[in-house]
Image 1 (cartoon, rainbow, N blue to C red):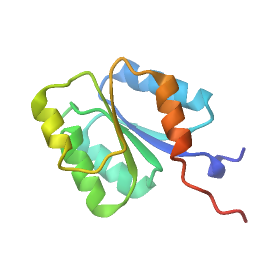
Image 2 (cartoon, one colour; image 1 turned 30 degrees about the vertical axis):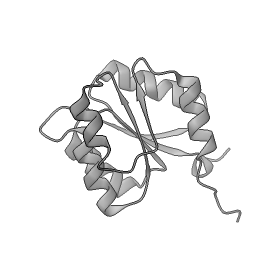
Image 3 (tube, one colour; image 1 turned 60 degrees about the vertical axis):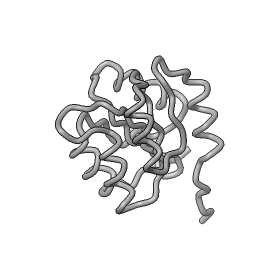
Image 4 (cartoon, rainbow, N blue to C red; image 1 turned 45 degrees about the vertical axis):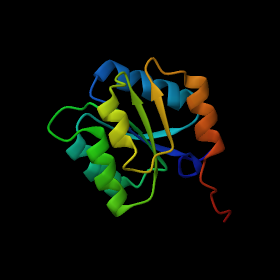
Length: 129
């Protein structure tokens, strides 16, 4: 499969080892990881520039922009599938999630089989050339 045919994913996760593990697992299933971002500002800029098919987004991030605020800003510029993955389930985060469109919310530890199934079911269709 050519790189251009692979589903493109942006990982937004501030825990380095977790982000690298996500990257490893996704690449092993033939997804293209465009970049790993640790903070909301980088996530916003990278999403707008790279236009991923999916964004795997943690809620708590380095810096003053959390994953929910980053997702809101990204959605002003492009339509992409956002999947939240977080170890936090406080009601204030879950209430704020109602303010935006997102594909799914997974709590950590992540069940990668469920994530891969979700990604495969929602893959954008590539035009044959």
